[in-house]
Image (cartoon, rainbow, N blue to C red):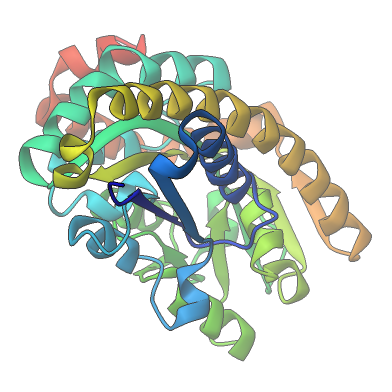
Length: 308
């Protein structure tokens, strides 16, 4: 009897997150469809095994993991075009963002990633809109961020955004940020509310502002040599299951955001919902970056978003 196809899936969150549940969704259906032809294994949180969150990129590229996910910002140094979807206030809402990432924009970015990295990209999980938390004071305007140190993803676009907002932006991996937040040596961070709760940041940051400044997707990437070596029926099944898992994860993500806000408020934290005028001040502050982006990326990419 032939050896089973080993499929090892990994991420960087506990089994309770929408991402981990979606990996289980894929694995359960693979086992149901193929039985002993596949051997499915999980490493839900590589950080529990001494890795940094960013290491998942290498683990999949080297084939130590078969499938993983990671915020697209972690790949911008290798795939500069991904800097486009790091732009602030690019998407108005989830519906617009999902349509773009599932449509021409997402397909274009998949092509660019696969040109440069040994992945096969099969879809985009939703990390969603990001908000600011900090230990110092409520934030209502960019002026409230002046001099505030804040962790940003490893993206020059993210760094520049917060510099325009007056903060001291510090690119670093999630593991470093969590350690500094717990030590009290980092003033602020930005994340979807669910991530803020998952990593316990609300226990250290009293102030949370709903800025929705970035929408970040997490590409679902497979070790390309492994994927391309599978029989066609297994490849086809994986493609379909990832598409189904994306829809499943996005539904869970909305539920997580609502639950996370309740958790943050129950912990005695202050949640600031910006007025329209306050939100406009943040958008105005980053206009130089958006103007540069039109020259750097071209109008075609903005048309893919529907903002040209």
